[in-house]
Every structure is written in C-alpha cells, then in structure tokens.
Length: 192
Image (cartoon, rainbow, N blue to C red; front, side, top):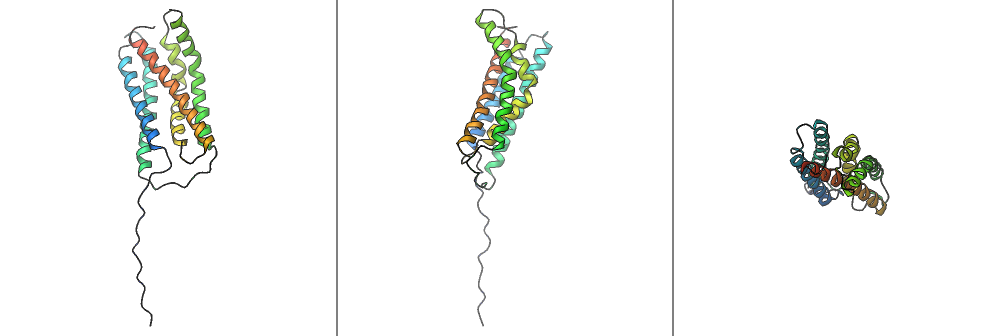
C-alpha cells in the first residue's frame, strides 16, 4: 500500500506592478492637477464681463482634471495588479493613437498660440481667446493624448513605442504649458 503524498497548499503569487511606468504616470498626473489649479486661480481673476473666456478656462480646466485623475487612478490600479506579460518590442496601436490625438490638439493650438505670441512680441495686447480657443475645441483629443500616451509608455515595449508615446506626451505638455501660461497672462491683466 502506498502512502498518500502531501501537497503543498496553494500560495497566491505576490502582486507586482504591471509594465506601466508608474513614476511617469504619477508625475504627469500630478503636473496636470497642478496646472488645473493654476488655471483656476488665474481664471478667477478674469474680468467679470468676459463670459466666453471664462467658459474656455472652465473647459480647459475640466480637461486637465479629467486627464490628471484618470492617469493617477490608472497608476494606483496598476501598482496593485499582477505583472502583465511582456509586450513585443514594437510600436503599439495605443502609442500611435496617442500621437495622432496629441498632434491634432497641437495643430488646433498652434495657430492661436502663434497669434498670441506674435502680439506679445509686437508689444500689442494679445487675446486669451486666440490662445485658448483651439485647445477648448480640441480638449477631448488633448486629454486622450495624455491618457493614451502615458498608458502606452511601457518598459520593454520597444524603442519605437517609447518614442511615439514620448512624443505624444511632449506635444500634449507643450499645449498645457502654453494654454495655462496664457491664462496666467490674462488673469494678470496683461492681455485681452
């Protein structure tokens, strides 16, 4: 008669972070939340007889808040999940989509911001609506460019994936810096 063999009890593997770059995600998310606060602080200084400018500022703030909270929320969820399987080292669809969306937002932002900067350089009173109008109307692609760019930036995803996701994040950040700076300038009464 053979003796029964004892089996070791099942031990659940310890959760490890997924391949998402958690530090980058948290830094970008926190930056967007700070930018939203700065936008609101200076937006509250807009003239009372500028309802359209206030609506633009409000919409841009919502875009910053949504992107910031989604990115930070995803980073918290990903820090508690089991490690994802390695991705092949090539450009992923998410990185390509992120770059396209960020490029659309940048192209919507560029003409108005160029006009704003040209007016400032010429010593004329620049218009906040010029700088913020394109971003207000391209807010969804702009926020999604941030979200998808951070989500696509993964360790082990390959150089092409990192470059595309990094470009998407960089373009979206340029738009954020420009539009929040325009809000600060308008809030200080240095533009119209």
